[in-house]
Length: 96
Image (cartoon, rainbow, N blue to C red; front, side):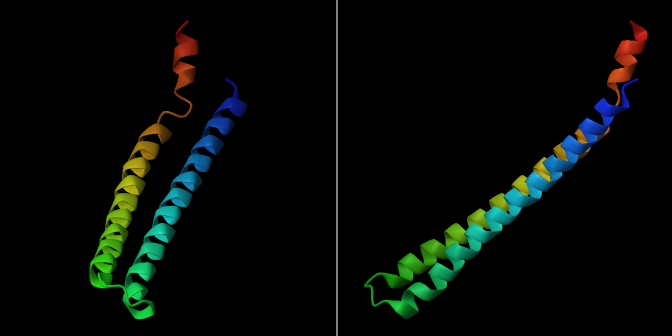
């Protein structure tokens, strides 16, 4: 049994977890940018349709946040499902 392979699989899963968290934080950051832009557009400019633009930015912000949360938990579930298969390859090699 090759323990290095199992260790590599576990480390790969940990990198995947960190990548998933990083992706969620990117969604959160982008959502915050749109929220700040939406809140401040009316205060900083005198655009005729400022309220409409503000509403669009805040809506996009909410959609990005919901999408980020959904994506995070969907990927987390997939990662946890993959975690239980680490090291199971040895059954295939022992039976041959």
